[in-house]
Image (tube, rainbow, N blue to C red; front, top):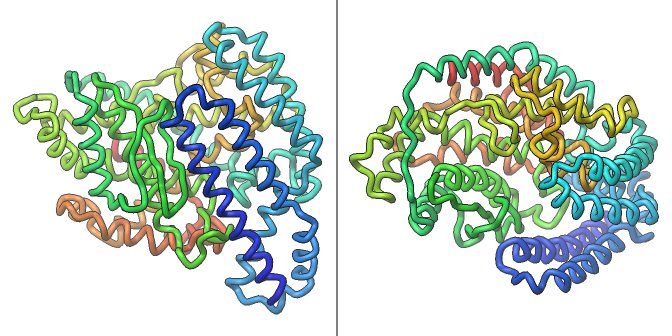
Length: 495
């Protein structure tokens, strides 16, 4: 149909500008000299403005309106493509320009000041800026909620996890809260009776990089369409045909960079595995942040921290660092190193058992902030109470390691945090099904893990955004999200 062809051509053109923005962003984080920061920021802002203008042009309104009246003439594939283009367009066009600009300015101000305020443990200064960000986020949430006919928080959540609702998350996280705190304590008590020897450094950066690339190759990363570099904060960026992943190295602890590389390789394999015939279209993109996180956590947690894969890593690490006779590299000890559990203040350093606690407390706070049930001034006490309840730690007065530690809220990214734990739940459910259909440990032991990724390609990657997350999970595992699989996995591995 003519309007559909016009829409798809327009969105493919947009994808070229998004491609350039992604590579510029990678370069900014990895290679760009510090003196280029202002010119790069100006150039990227101009590119973002142009892209937004092209995404909200009046022509799109006319084309979408015409197709709305003719959807019965579309086949399933066309209808899915139309749905995802319209979704992206509505997200961009629903907000007035004045609000978009105000959000950008408030976010930039809050984030810039946060860097120094966190170091100084300055909650009062941070709270003053955060109040403005929250007020604008609430305004955005209500505008989006009116357009979608849903609650304000659900409207923000939909930006990251389409079709997910706060009611569903309350149900899922409520189930986690019934067993996770006791399980954390039981695991800590059990591990306190074990002796674990940590590998002693130094581990040269060049050797760590070589080991990381070997693991990437083992996991099927396509080096002709991607690369590994260094940045302050590890990430996966770029585009499916040119995936850029980064890590950071600690010469005293090689496992930190290595597991970061494996995590980002999971994101990269998803991107590289998206259907090429849908490239450049919204329907050809990853389904959601939660599904994306499920692929990285599948690689890092479900695979790499299993006994079978830890054996492979240990063998390669011995060779990379010439530690054949080092007791710390005995397979049993090495697996204990990779599965240590220790409640801590910092989310990004948390193990997979305690990590959901960090997410649940943030979700509870941001949900109530957006609904108006609580205000910014109440965050520290609420945070401290939850940390004591979930992890037995107090953050009273310790703002920099408590409620000021994350960057997400500084720019108004409310609705993002739940996707981290949703990804862990999705990953556990996928692995449970996979183990029923194939000998996962035997495949890992063989050194050729391609059957595992062939399964993910068939059930997740090649589906892209052609269907809902519920349908994606149901088709792959026989049921929609079921958190009991995560409980069985955690308690089975750690207890």
